[in-house]
Each structure stands twice: as C-alpha cells, then as structure tokens.
Length: 122
Image (cartoon, rainbow, N blue to C red):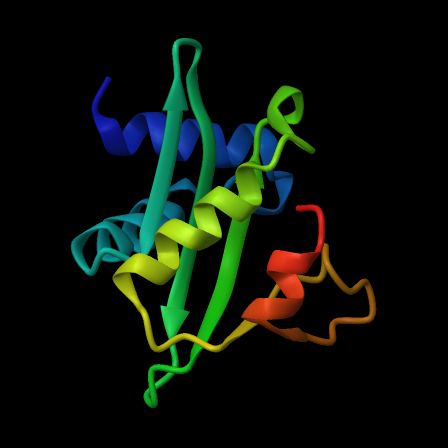
C-alpha cells in the first residue's frame, strides 16, 4: 500500500466526516504533501496523527483543516510537539485557526494565538 493510501485509510477511519469522499481526500492530501502543509506522525503500529493546514497570504495564520490523532495517542503532548514542528517550517505563524465543526458545533472557526495553544495541554 502506498503512503498516500495509508494516510487516506487513517483519515477515513478516524474522521468519519470524510467517509465516501476518498477521491476528494486523495486530491487534497496529494496537494498538501506537495506544498509541505501536511504532517504525518508514525509509530511502530502505523500512523499516529495527520494534520493539514493552509497558511494565510500574510503568513501569520495557520488554518488547520484537519488534525486527527489516533485515540490511543491522545492527551500525551503530541499536539504540542506537532505544533512546534509546524512552526519550524512556518516561523511567521502567530495565530492558529481551527476550521472544522468538530471544534465548534455551531460552525464557527476558533482562532488562538500560538502562545495560548502552547500554554494549553493539547
């Protein structure tokens, strides 16, 4: 199984929002991998987490589109480590905008400063 197939299988398994949308997910993931706006973390069992984002034109806001962490790996500081890795590649990012309804059921986006997020236990 190719790398992108493994990523898609992980996303569909742990984020049912994308069920029956594999071709759209494949296209999006291929673009995000190309532009280095997708991070995949693995352990000995396979993929642990996938996050993908867009960067605002001014470079100061990362729009997190998906951030999926395997249930057995949550609440262990992985989110913070991934955010720090994201910031290495995009050092001008000052704000993080969460896009999905999973974060806000009423559909609103949530914007936090990088400092606020790093202070939280994620």
